[in-house]
Length: 284
Length: 288
Image 1 (cartoon, each protein chain N blue to C red):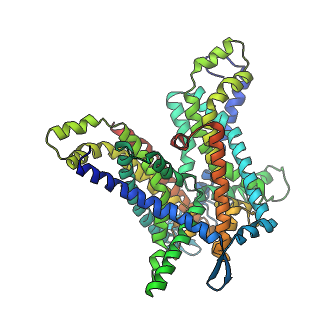
Image 2 (image 1 turned 180 degrees about the vertical axis):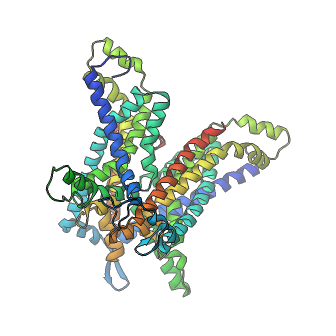
Image 3 (image 1 turned 90 degrees about the vertical axis):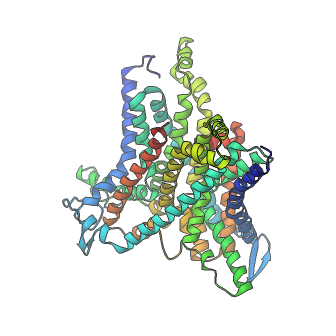
C-alpha cells in the first residue's frame, strides 16, 4: 500500500473513509464544546435555543459570563501564577542539565540521565502523593522541633509548583539538550580566541543559539502546567488552579460558562502549541 | 578542561539536577514506601509491617479494582494500536509535503487542549440529554432518550481518545524511516499486501509500537479524570481509590501502599516492554 503500487479503487476509498472518520472522531468533542458555548440555554446540551454571547460577557444570573465570573477569573490568575513559576524554574534547571549532559563526561552520567528520565514513567497521581507525604513528614518534624508553623510545606501553591516542576523539567531538559547537541563548539572557541571570557562566550554565542529551544520549552512548560490535573489534584490547597476549579464545577453539574472557558482554553492552547512547533524553526 | 574554573562550573551545573532529583523524586518515593509499611496502632503511634499490603490482598474490592484497571488499560493500549496504526501509516506513507504536515498538526491540536476539556466534550456528546442521544431520537432510530455515559464503553472511548496521539506520533516517525523501495521489493518478489505488512512493515515499526504502547498504557493506568467523569460514581479506577484513601478517608498508610502497588505495576510493564523489545529507556522516551 504505497503510491507507486496500484491498489483496487474500492480498498483506497475504504481507507480514505476510515481516515476521514478518524479525524471526525478527533474533532467532534472539541467542536461540541465550542458550539455550546454560544447556546442560549442554561444547560450545555441540545436543543439549540439560539445564539448568544452571554456566556462570555453576561452579567445577570444565571447568565454570568466568563469575564464576570469571579471564581473562574481567580482560578485563571492562580493557574497563570503557577505556570510562570513552573516554566521559569523548569527552563533554568533544564538549561543547566543540557550543559551538564552535552558538555561534560563524568562517572555515573548514564545513571543520572536515566534518573532524569524517571519522572516520565511515574504516574502523575503517584508523583503528587509522594511529594505530599514527604513534605508533610518534614513539616511535622519541623513543627514538633521548633513549635513554629510551616504552611509552605502543607498542600498549597508552593507544593503545586514543586510537583509540576518535578516532571516538566524533564521535558525542558530534553528539548534544550537536543538543540545544544547541534551547536558547533568551534564557534565558542573562536569567541575565546578573540578574547571573550568563558561566561562571555556562553552568554553571547551559545545562549542566543539556544534561545529558540529555550522559548519553545518555556511555552510547552506553561501549557503542561496550565493543563496538569493529576499531580495538582493531590497537592492543591485552598487556591485552586483552573483545571481543579473546572473539575469541581463539572461534578456539580455544568452551565455553558464552562464551555466558554474551554473555548478560550482551546484557542490559547492551539496558538501556544503551534508557536512551540514553529518557533524553533523560525531562525535556524 | 581540567582547570579549577571548569571544575567549579561542573559542580554548579550538577547542583540543580541533584537537588531536583533527590528532593523531589527520590526522597519522596522513599518516604512513600516508609509510610506504606507503617501500621497505625494508636493516635500518632506506628509500627513497621506489611499490614497495608495485606489489607490490599485481603479485600477483594481493592485487588479486583487493581486488576480491572490493569486489564482496561491493556485493552485501551491494544485499541489505540489497532485504530492508530492505519492513521500513522496513511500519514507516513500515503501523503507528503503540505498535506502530511496538516494532517499531523490536526492530530496534535486536540492534545494540546486540557484533558478536562476533551472529557467535557465527551460528556456533552454521550449523556442522556446529550448530542448523540438527541440526534438518534430526531432520526427516529430510538424512541426515548438513551444514557451512553457512565459505563465501561464510555471510559474506553475516552481513554482511547486521550492517548491515541502518543501511539500515532512514534508510529509515524518509525514508518517514515521505512524505505518505500523495501515495500516495492516485497511486491516484486510476489508478496501480498498481508504478507508485506506482516514481514516488512510491522517488524520495522516494532520500536514505535513498543514506545507508543508503553506510553499509552502508563497514561491509561494513571488516568483519573476520564474514568471518574465518564464512568460515574461506580467506575472503580485504581487512581480514584488512592485519591479516596488520601483525601476523603485520610488513611495515608493504606493510600501509600496502593500508590506503591500502582507504581510497581506501571514500572514493571515499562521494564517488561523494554526487555522484550531490547530497547533502552533513553531511546524510547526520546522518540515519544
